[in-house]
Image (cartoon, rainbow, N blue to C red; front, side, top):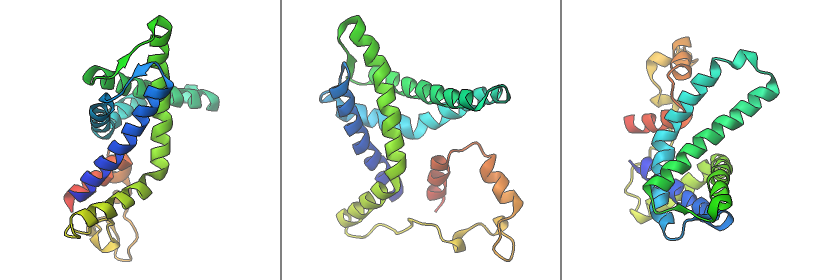
Length: 195
C-alpha cells in the first residue's frame, strides 16, 4: 500500500507542475483546476495510459516489417503523441481546464500540451526512482516509521518455480514476463500488491 501511495503522490505532484507549465506556455487555462486535473491526469497515466499504449503498439506492430528505421521512429513519436493527445482530451473533459485564445489559440491549446506531456513523462521516467525513494522516506517519517519496508524484493523472495537450483532463471520465467502484455510499471505494481 505504501508504494502505491508514494507512487501516486509523487506522480501527482509532478503532474501538477507539468499542468502549471502547460497553463503558462499554451493557451490552455489551468489555474486552480491544476489540483483536480493533476488527480485525474495521474489516475489516467497510471491505469489507462498503459492499456491505450499497448493497444496502439499492437496495431502498429502489424505493419512494422514494412517501415524503415526512420519510419519506425516517426511511428513511435506519432503513437506517443496520440496517447498524450487522448490523455489531454480526457483531462480537459473531466476537469476545469479549458482551451482559450480563439481558433488559432485553440489549435495550439490542443497540440502543444500533448508535446509538453510527452516531455514531462520522459523527464519523470528518468527520475522516478529517485523521486519515489525520497517520497518514501518522507512517508516513513510522516508515519513514524511504522510502514513495512518492502521496497525491494530480494532474490530470496523470488518464485522457486522461476529459477533453477543454481539460481539461474528458468526459460518459463523469462517468457511469462516478456509475453504477459504488461508494462514494467504494471508488473511492479502487481508484484507490490502480492507482497
